[in-house]
Image (cartoon, rainbow, N blue to C red; front, top):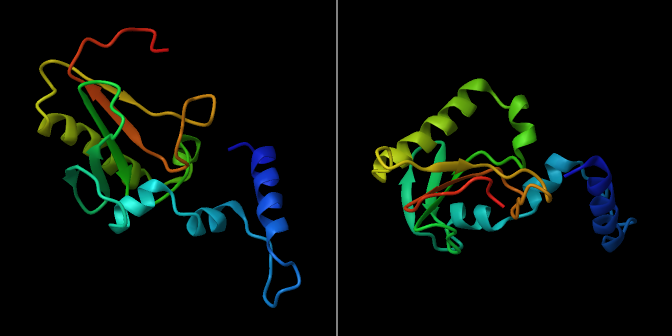
Length: 148
């Protein structure tokens, strides 16, 4: 989300709140993300069901409900952040665990010999539909290039 988009969204949210209520103050982007529950937050909390493929202390992987290939699995970190552009500010160990888990999921699904694609969408123009960092594992057919 660009700074301009964030400011616009924040101002719309703030206009809906009564600015004179006790304790009112403006929210920054991190605070807003903590309050805003995405579909992935609801899956992690158990509020929404998911077809679980893999889980450990740091990630959760599940089948996409709108698959774009015969195998379409989403891998999400349990520590929430919105976009790939924020990954450079994350601890290197956390980032390494995430990408290691993506590889483990592909191996668990027996995709290593036939091949697969890992996709990370970033922002609206990049095709990111949920403001929660995640990776897609696509497989089960010959994937073409360029992708759309």
